[in-house]
Image 1 (cartoon, protein in one colour):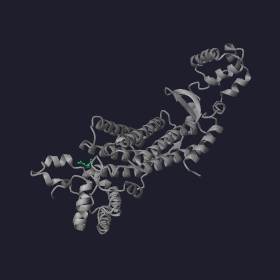
Image 2 (cartoon, protein in one colour):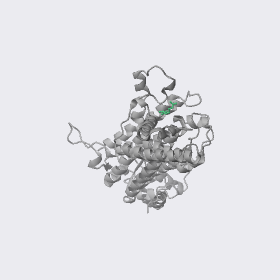
Image 3 (tube, protein in one colour):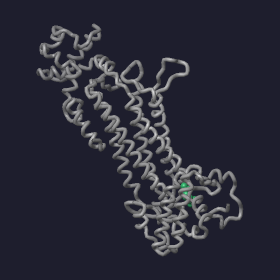
Length: 459
Ligand code: ARG
């Protein structure tokens, strides 16, 4: 098969160059979007009287038939023909003859690939937003069914203050909501048509770019042909957004790994999402969480690859740009798989409320509230902080806890302590007092859950 661009060449391409240059082994997945864009382009060429309507009809029928062949897995992709575009064009000419040779009028593979990628990305963004929504739904459902469960909140991974388990889960819902917002905003920037920019300077044919944009449901057309064929900002934004999603999943993974360790024992992840050990019969390992945490690094790598790819490129299209695809596909596939697996894993998690309660009794998490208690009795906060610090020290030396300490001992440290001090010392009371917007009081958490439900479009 002679090359699409073979006219001015006399010698043959080196076979290693064919291996180096081919992209069809990974860009053939763009075929459905490539064909959709070609149908819109051909329709416009016909309507603008650039090619005959009878030929347009043949082209569209041919492209639709090729689409079916590809969907059925019956297309033979030829790496000697470089990429998805050339393979499809060659298949079209083979099928319908000379009319097929007119399809590429007024366009270049440069604006063609830019268009395909935006069409493809738009669909991936929609899929990711749907997956983010489902995961938020799973977290909300888990939170709602454990609304009264309390666990230790940490700073520095040291017991800090008790919080509602639902409040903890809602922290992840917030992260995922920001991810959704990010991809929603990105979609607007992606949804601009580059086709019509041709190689880089535009085309002399009287094309109607607006018509193509409408046919392909783009919101508008690109404003500068040189930028349009070389811009890959949206791919970097996409992989940055994917990296943030992965980072959020990775942090959650880390917590699930800690929580499911017998040292914590806060949760037990379901059998379908854990694995055993080939040597230690007792093991139930949180591999899903570990793999998601591991795959986060790989998506960061994709982002780094794209940023590095772009940094030295002069205007306009450079063949380097072909290297954008594998990184982007990988970021997209990885984030979608991880979101889907996570959404399924969440309902499998059994919450061990007793272990959480036991851990909540440790680490003197009542200390802040004891200081606040003294403040209410008129002691300046800094002074109160010092007094409670001494009481905590006393407890560690006597191997006892704050709720177990007798009133006379409290009074040894401050005359302001009275019998009502014990009322502030239960985890329920501590949680209930954090009753301001964004706080962990049950009333606030219930309201936040309701709001999150609404935001996700749940009933
Ligand atoms: N396969 C190419 C890519 O992905 C399509 C554009 C080719 N353009 C060119 N001037 N060789 O970048």
